[in-house]
Length: 164
Image (spheres, rainbow, N blue to C red):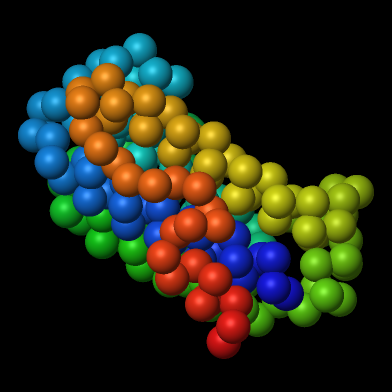
């Protein structure tokens, strides 16, 4: 499905851009409590990866669990960045394999149907990522960091992803 492939490619490009900007900060700056939902830039980045893994596990029938939505997966920024990129590669591969029939089928989680077709839950999945990336960009701009262009139609390489 074109839209899902596009959103997956956009998600990956934005995460790469965001992590490049975050790499300009020291570890203590990334971890500083900035009164965000998940306290810090590092906390928000960890939350994004954790929730992506939760949803992705549901989508692929390989559920995972965590102690809480604020659990720190990786204290080391470079490791978090590698795991983020690996997750984004998996999301792109999964999205490329979805069909219209997949997206219109009922979404099941934990063996039960939740009343929405998969496309609704996938839309939420990508919207959640955008929501928290927006929080990180606000925190980065408070530090005077340029995180780059975020508007989907002008992000290099995204449109090419749906042509394959």
